[in-house]
Amino acid sequence: MLLTTTKIQNTAPRKKAVRLFDGRGLYLEIAPTGSRWWRFKYRFAGKEKRISLGVYSDVGLKKARDRREEMRRLVADGVDPSAARRQEKLATLESAENTFEAIAREWFGKHSPNWEASYSVKLLARLEANIFPWLGQRPIRDVKAPELLSVLRRVESRGVLETAHRLLNYCGNIFRHAVATGRAERDISADLRGALPPSTPQHHAPQGVAALLRAIDGYRGSNVTRYALQLAPLRGDQSFADSFVKRCAADAQDARRLRDFES
Image 1 (cartoon, rainbow, N blue to C red):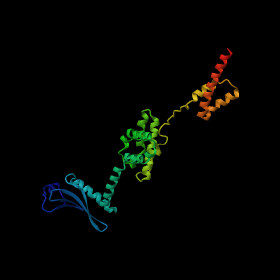
Image 2 (image 1 turned 120 degrees about the vertical axis):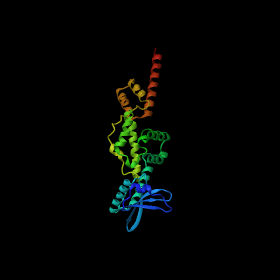
Image 3 (image 1 turned 30 degrees about the vertical axis):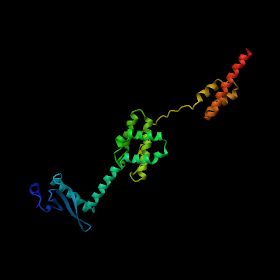
Image 4 (image 1 turned 120 degrees about the horizontal axis):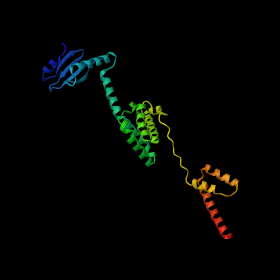
């Protein structure tokens, strides 16, 4: 006879555990302490086994029957429900431990000793401010390319496109570390190649070049020498620039002395 909610509520605890059977392997076990647990009894690989389906009344009669049918389907498919539950718990624990932030800090700890201290501080600060608040607690294997792009778009919208590109590069290194250590399937940052607008780097003239160009412009020697001097900055030779500027200054001083003498 099938169980009813009325029978469950009217059955009091006894000195020994009481089992109220519902059929097809499902029963409610009432302990002497008063706790009531749903259990499913089944046979797998020739052995009788039991698995808990929850506590009454958190799990009502209908839900307990639904869970029983799920377990029966697993057994019919050749899957041990107890083993499947253990694997599910391990996977949940693994996901909780292998979050994006946890893997990122592991990668950072491995490589930061080889970096300049100032670079390490900036890199970690960028991750903490721009990536961790949105992706930090996500299991790294579950993070998808559109999620990462959405986070990078936040940075881009602030007008710091170069920082967005830096963060994408950092994330690529983190994902590759996760792949190498078996915590992710692939580097999803590779899917975002070209997704961000290219950043325009700012180029600054090397120190002394401005003074060199002014000195060349004021040079009054032969044309051959002038042309050679105009090509000199392309060499990027700082020592040459410094020496030429000093030479021009000395020549100018000599010219002034000669004019003073002649006058």
